[in-house]
Amino acid sequence: MLSRRLTLAFVLAAAVDVFPSFGCAQEARNAVRIDVVANDYAFLPLPARIASGPTMFTFVNQGKVNHEMSVGRLRPGATIEDLLKVSREGGRLRDLVTRSVGILVAGPGKSPDGRLLVDLIPGETYLLFCNFKDTPDAPTHMTLGMYATFRPQ
Ligand SMILES: [Cu+2]
Image (cartoon, rainbow, N blue to C red; front, side, top):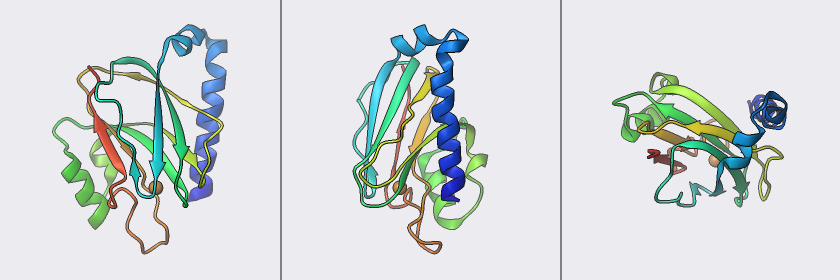
């Protein structure tokens, strides 16, 4: 599972590198940068106000276990309580998430090589979360508190 996620992270990292050749260099250059920092088991607070438009997410894992920064866009009406219930009790997170936007993965004390360029849509609710478990029977990091939501303005 981790190796599949790592592969995806590499694909995303490659996609970021490829953007300039598709004429998006300007967008990447103008993107607001948000540095997301994880520890065991939380994300440090995000900026109080996040603007819509091109946004570059970076990720640092300051914890002692592997973490991911998965970004999703919530379905209208879905709440963080709904997501936590599904994460705790099982079920399909994708029923509550309209769109999986992208994932960055980092080992303990590391950053991924790539970053994540997202065109944030005003008024949508975004979820940052880590869906990893330390062992197959352990709770997901999300249920331990590793999530954050924000609404771009
Ligand atoms: Cu985690």
